[in-house]
Each structure stands twice: as C-alpha cells, then as structure tokens.
Image (cartoon, rainbow, N blue to C red; front, side):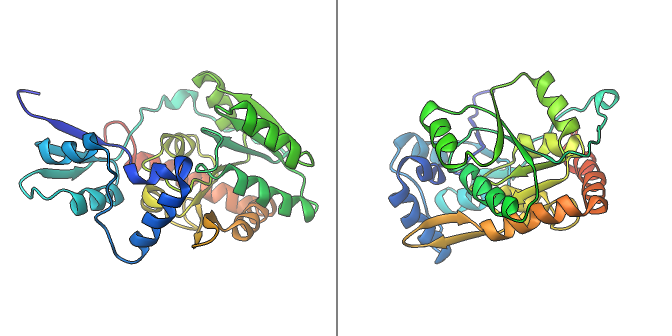
Length: 271
C-alpha cells in the first residue's frame, strides 16, 4: 500500500498447534501461564512478517499482547481494530419457540470445543432437560462417525456448511447459541449471534473474553489446563449455564437484548 507493508493478524499462530500438535501446544500454553510471552513458531514467514511490517493491525488486545512480545522493532505501529459486520435491521427478527434448540456454528473440531459441548449436553440430558443441538459447519467423516458412536443418546442435527440466508434463519429461531472454543479471536459467529439477539454462552478465552461481559450480554465458561490432559472447557459449568438458560426465560431475554446492544455499540461495520 503505497510502498508500505500492512500486516493483519487475525489469529495467534502458536495456538493452532492445538489441533495439529497438542504436545507442543500444551508446552507453549504452560509457558504462557507462567508469564513467558515470547511465543512464536518456527515458521519463517511468521517471524519475517513481524520484522518487515510497517503497521500491524490486530483484531483483539490479546493478539496485540502477543505481537508486542514477539515484535522487537518498537518503531512498528500496532493497533487493535475489532471485526465488524453490517446489519440489515429490517431482516433481523427473533422467532421464539417453546422448543429449546441450541446452535453451534463453525468448524466441528476439538479446538472449537464441540466435544466439550456434547459432554455438557449429556449432563444436561441426565437432568431430564430435552434439547436439540444443531451443528452448522464443516465436519469430516471421521469426526461425524465419532459423534454418532459416542453421543447417539443426544438429538443432533448435522447441517454441514449452509448458506448465509439459512444461517440467518437459524440465528433467528434458535433458543441458545454456544461458542465453546478453546482459543478464539474476534469471532464473526459471535458478532452475528449478537446482531440477531441470540442468548449466548462463550468460553472465557482470548478475544471472546474481551467481547462479552459475563451475566450481561453472555455467560462465560472458564477453561481448565492440566499438564496431563491439556486444555479443556469446564464442562460442569457449561452444563450448569445451559440448564440455567433453559429454565430462566427472563435471563435469555435479557442476554438477547444486551447482545444486540453490544453489537450496535462495538461491532458494527462503521465502528
């Protein structure tokens, strides 16, 4: 851009080893918990990007902290600009149903917290709470078979990848939206759910922690780290939060109203 290099950082690169090399992820996560912040992979492109950019734009303060720890050139400007979306308000209208339908949108994988969600729903089912889970997003055959084999007692609707038009209908009709990711930046799904007034439960990680206020516009669920078992979402607290929202319609309505307000104040395209 005019001879300048603009770097847009929409991820924290080392965290993606959770899916590909969990041993490395656990080592680096432990280091981050112990105050070691200079966490950078061995990829030359990543190292080179931080040193050659004239300006770095992050989509969260957590990502900016990562950049600050690995970027040794203090002259490089670093800023935070959250993602934003443009809403067509005339098309956004929530449709309420007596049936509790929980919606997950995204890649169906461990790092997105899907299995923690399924385990939590089994706990909810044990309390005789009947819910339907809709999974919208890419799911490979091996993961789908694993879910069918281990969670056949749950009512699950696999949709695969869907059009945005169909996704807006899901946002408008679902009872609860859940984003249980083990790491996440400024999630477009979180913004979309807020835009449509979905009562949301999110994991208390990275940018999701910055985007939402617990008990005001979402319910936050902490993660647990164990050197032997790695990083996991607190499934008991997630089950408790789901049960709480199922039983408390007034809370669902309050979270819905405040989610829209959160979107309008912080995550519009103009903002």
